Length: 60
Image (tube, rainbow, N blue to C red; front, side, top):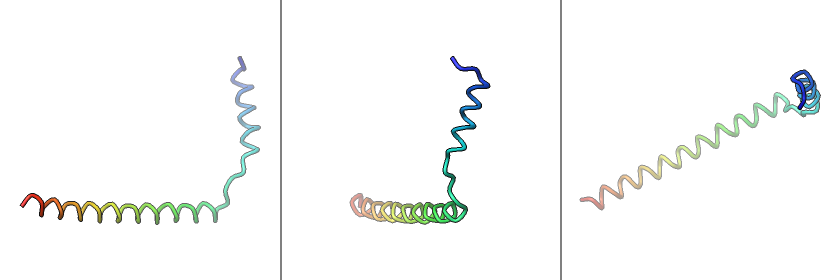
């Protein structure tokens, strides 16, 4: 079993190997996630509206 100090040193070494995204990549990908989330939200909202109207017609 490793000691906590050894573990933390290994964590630090591994974090040095990480390739962090650039600021532009973070902004671009964040915008993409927001756009896709809005598109899916509108799509599901539209489906909900259509099915609500269809159910209202069926129930009559």
